[in-house]
Length: 193
Ligand SMILES: CC(C)(COP(=O)(O)OP(=O)(O)OC[C@H]1O[C@@H](n2cnc3c(N)ncnc32)[C@H](O)[C@@H]1OP(=O)(O)O)[C@@H](O)C(=O)NCCC(=O)NCCS
Image 1 (spheres, rainbow, N blue to C red):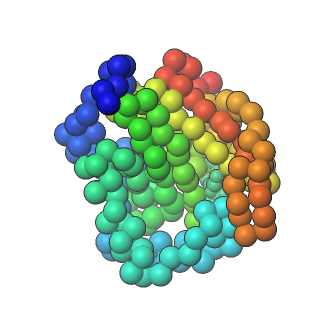
Image 2: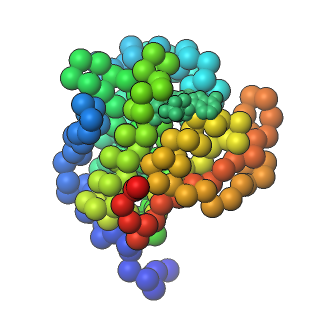
C-alpha cells in the first residue's frame, strides 16, 4: 500500500554517499575492516560490554560483523563505525536501526575498558549525531540504556540527548528484565551546550 507521507530521507541518499570518516578531538570514526576482528573478539570478552550488549563474538562472527556494515550501508538499514586513532581501535558506534521513512535511528556504543573515562563515547556520539542530522538528514536519534548503566546515561546526556522517560521492563538481560531510559535528540534541538 502506498505511504501517503513522503519519506523523511529520499531512498538512495545513504547508498549514494561513500561512508565517511568523521574526525573529532584526535578520534577517527571510520568504517570497519576485516583486520579489526581481533579487537572485536577481545572487546566482547569485557564483562561490561558482554553485559550491556548481551552477546559474545568469536573470530568468524567478528569478521562477519565487520563486513555486515557495508551491506547495511548499501541497504540503508544501518551504519557502523570503529572509533579509532590512526593506530588503534578504541570503541564502536553505530546507527543500528535506520528508518529513512521516519528519519529515525537508535544508536549503540561501547568503548574498550582501557580507553574509558576520557570522553571518547561522548565525543563519538556528538560527532556521529552532527553528521547524521546535517548530512544524512535524520530527524530523530534515540539512545536506550538500562537504568543500571549510569555511565551510558552520562554519555547520552552530555551529548545532548534529553531524557524522555523510563520504559518499564523493556530489555531482557542475563539477570532479568531492565527498566530502560529513553534519551533522544531531534534535528531542531540546536547545538549542544
Ligand atoms: C558507557 C561507555 C560507552 C562510556 O564510555 P566512555 O568513553 O568512558 O564515556 P565518557 O568518558 O564519554 O563519559 C562517561 C562518564 O560516565 C562516568 N561514569 C563511569 N562509570 C560511572 C558510574 N558507574 N556511575 C556514574 N558515572 C559513571 C565517567 O566517569 C564519565 O564521566 P566523567 O567524565 O565525569 O568522569 C563505556 O563505559 C562502555 O563501553 N561501557 C560498556 C558498554 C556500554 O555500557 N555500552 C552502552 C550501552 S547503552
